[in-house]
Image (cartoon, rainbow, N blue to C red; front, side):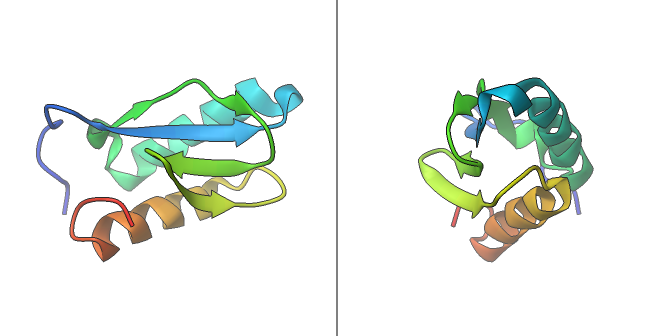
Length: 88
């Protein structure tokens, strides 16, 4: 089931990644988000430098040791459906 059209104020999604991985990771996150069908509900923020983490607004929904698009998809879907259509 695909969510309705983009809301007035979309959620913010941001990766925290080591600097050298920024470009590749952002591309992977864009693809992972599109695969969930939730892409209309999120604005992608520019990645920030730091340890690997995926942030939904101000909540870390995934922390890891490297890029893991499958885990990002799982975290997004779990956060979405587990909360009734909002984060965590």
